[in-house]
Length: 102
Image 1 (tube, rainbow, N blue to C red):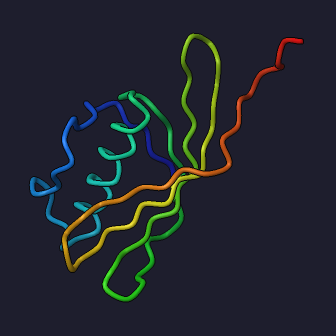
Image 2 (cartoon, rainbow, N blue to C red):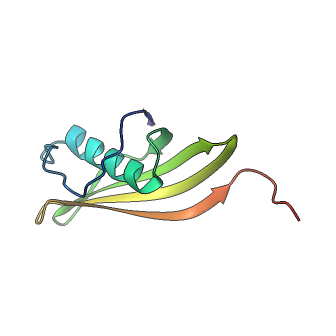
């Protein structure tokens, strides 16, 4: 699945404005959290199907963003804890898609 985010990134850590009881609400909460940490409101994301792990839901994404004509990519795992209603994201495999200057 692909996703283009062009909404404003959330500046707080609260997720109460999203209904975490459904997949659409969890997707929006993850999107806002990723946008907040990337400090951008424009990025593309491809994600796997949502999976359930104990009392949590997990979304694995691959995020691409462009700034100043430079493209960077990250793998992102978003974990929604249904016990404490928190949304946490972890970034890995950061890649720059341009040649490094020597």
